[in-house]
Length: 407
Image 1 (cartoon, rainbow, N blue to C red):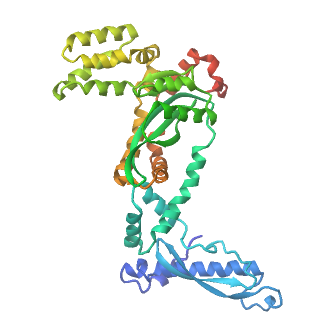
Image 2 (image 1 turned 60 degrees about the vertical axis):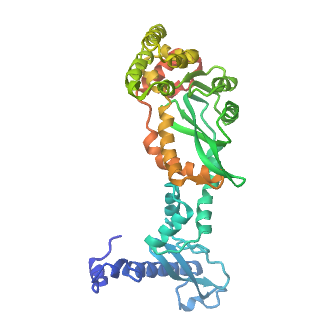
Image 3 (image 1 turned 120 degrees about the vertical axis):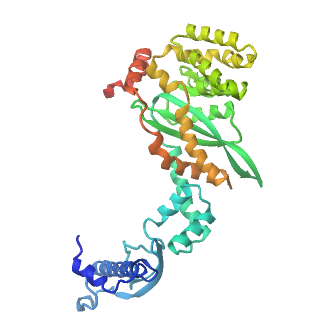
């Protein structure tokens, strides 16, 4: 609905400085109050069935019964409103509900600031400084606590039956436990569905990263509907592949090549790392496992002074070689857990800003919100996914029922 320009000109007739419009007692705040109170009057008239002072309202059994005063907090600061009430207390206003003390969108601002890693005190100070609203730490906690139920529903939602690729990783957070700050592991599982879309399947907090807890995580995924995983991309955690195969015996476990490269470079002086990285590239970019073996032998002959480098690859060779049976489209998708690491970088950024957490629940709240905020950056479909899916179909036709979708 367009507003008459003449009305705007009349309202601005006394305008001299910005405070006259957006100040504590400015025009916008006065208009907001007037519009809300007029809307409330219209609502109670609709509820009672007659206009104010209309004789038709006499002897109807329910009448207006004065007004209540309430303070509404919002982008405009604090606003004193008079809300009408009826004698039978059956009036339920919609534009400003009973017991509502914050204007629509205000909670969203609190949650947005929390998702950026701001503490309760920082949010409190920011709201007072920017909006002139005094908000108690309890109110802020109550707003963010509403996220907990959403996290629980998200964490227990049903999942797809088949994920062609799943990335599994963990990151560390500082959590207060029994009066002491401890490092705890947050387990992150990122799945790629049959459409090539990435989706975080869940977040779990444990004392530290270990294959035993990963076994619990994988069992939970199966209970939530994940019946099969074609390829699981993991780091070099001891016992991790065995934990995966215990729950998903047909899954191919692929070690993250980037993790192996990083582990190898730890044994090499900084000045030699660039050359070493180039030589390692000839291994994982080989066309076949046989060629990769020859390149590894060549690296061993060239870098005799650093035997630990080749040992990293030799120890994990059985978990590396499956990589070479795949075409380039699949290799690009699985040679690294960079997809989940990119996600983790977004999460770590929030963790670094926040520092520590009073409990595990607070950590999950923030990570869940940060996850939603960062989603647009890391949920883009896998590149060349159609080609990769075609190769999956050739390799495991009996495990690809979803091809009926016509992908």
